[in-house]
Length: 179
Image 1: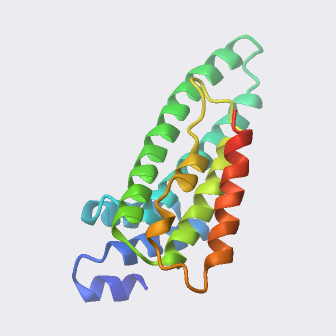
Image 2: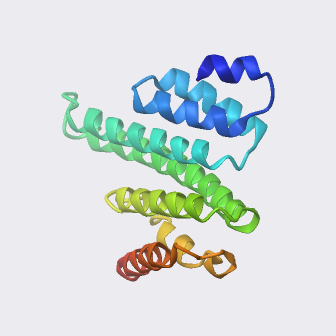
């Protein structure tokens, strides 16, 4: 796929985003980040790249928590270091989630592909569940409400009524439980 994208020689943010996500899922974070960066340089609202960026910062947050909790340097320094890392990590998570929300809003305003909306809405719910496990300084962003408030009525729901209803109900339920 990488060769095809390069040979095509044009701005193909979606292709770079998909390639970046595929590389991320295979463990090649450096290659993933390069392709995601290219995709976002071509289109700041490329949704797959925005999702991948959130996954990267969430993975970084988890790795940092594991490293700080297994630190042998002492019980006093560990929590202080952990708090500093957490504040920085939470800022990065918020920044990437803001970018993802902006891309979601752009998608829901400009695209009419029901299947893409459903796939991205599902990712937003999954990411919302993951950040729900993080005790973030200053509170957590509520991605569920973004799914609930999307202008679903502007889509042609033919053959997708149940899927749309299910994803909205899922997001509404989680939004009600959000703290």
